[in-house]
Length: 211
Image 1: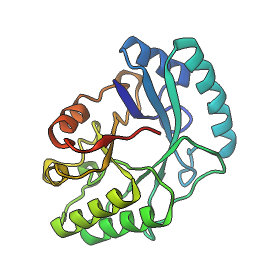
Image 2 (image 1 turned 45 degrees about the vertical axis):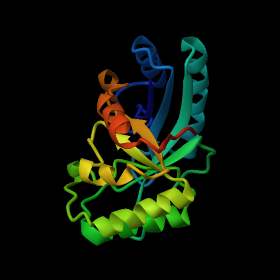
Image 3 (image 1 turned 180 degrees about the horizontal axis):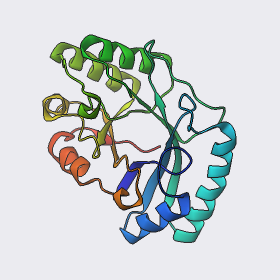
Image 4 (image 1 turned 135 degrees about the vertical axis):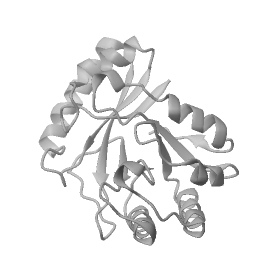
């Protein structure tokens, strides 16, 4: 089992890196990613914090015998832009973190993945941010773009997104997908049951994203 979306105390998570690694090991998870918010947020992961976190990741990986990737989650702004600290992360998740609807939502994501070297679209069409206004034509355009660019669609267990209507369009797509709990608490580390269920049902021709 894997979990590629876990927040730590280096942004808005409640647990330290070693605690997360220990919990993952207890749950039988052998591959995880610590993915903290970027510097567009006041509590985000600066270059200095990223270097400190990297040391903790290496130590925890050695102690608990699991693979831990170093990731970051950046917010896509109104212009489709993201901001990252100067650090070589294993992968980048780009997500919309405010209330955006309809065509503007698609425009932000498409602009971002076309301009920046991001790896995963985080919690797409999340109902927790009140998303509405899905458009099947724009869904297909988005899927065309991620297929061409090799950007993964995240199956996010915390947000329970994307929804079945979008996922049904992925059935015959040779795209990438990622699995993440989006945990901010220690107890939620590895809670990816929803993501795995959707992957089995809809990602029949897709490949699991690996950093």
